[in-house]
Image (cartoon, rainbow, N blue to C red):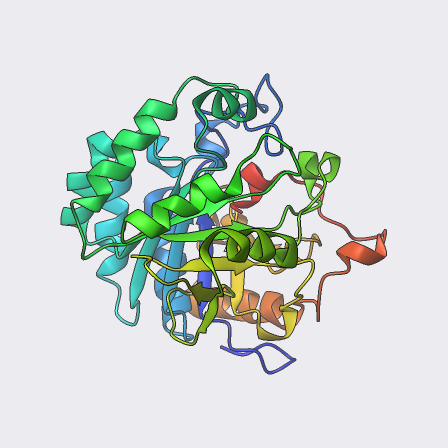
Length: 324
């Protein structure tokens, strides 16, 4: 499945639910978001059907996100169903890990290929300030549970926020001590994220090299998306960067997103895409769904324009609603 720029679109990120059990300051207001009626959210059957149709068009990789995907009932059953689709090579999940310790065995049994854990600090008090919840110990339990399954690729997603007290080296220690890849993700100017200063890749890399010595570019492939990685001597894992602002990678973008309410979204910045829920519920045939998906992919923007502060058809959803 290729868009009009010739980019191969083989990666789908699915938001299973908008709600979350944390209230991260750059993602969700303290009071949470408006509750969406359950019948407005895609059923697992509808998600599986969309993925099956897209797999016939070249979809290979699926990421389950939220909100917080692990609060969606029976998520492990969905993982198992998605893994059974012909053509799907990987099913992965991004989680805040608050519920992970209790669900890790079931996720492993279902065949999940990789788990990304969102964690912005190793300081318990700062974690509570960022997330507005006292859940740091539960996250550490989740990481420990995941490490018992070395066959599952484990990553930490850390968003530098420009806070003096946010020690990024402490997070990197997870990659030094364990088979964990730590990735620093530049703050995206979306929703509440617009209130924070993004810290660019070069600043972080300089901090890491001052502490650990010269970084070596890692040429291997460790995931589905645009991350690039470095090796440091003595590290069990790698250090990665997703630098959408300072190292724009739109020309290699291979992904689209499916919101929990069934909107196939083709770019984080814009509202471009197409609704799939209504056609599904009106009995659309697979060929009709393929035509709609093709239309959406063909309308995928060439690139984001975050630094240009462009106004117009811009995204009006928060990251918890998009499935960031």
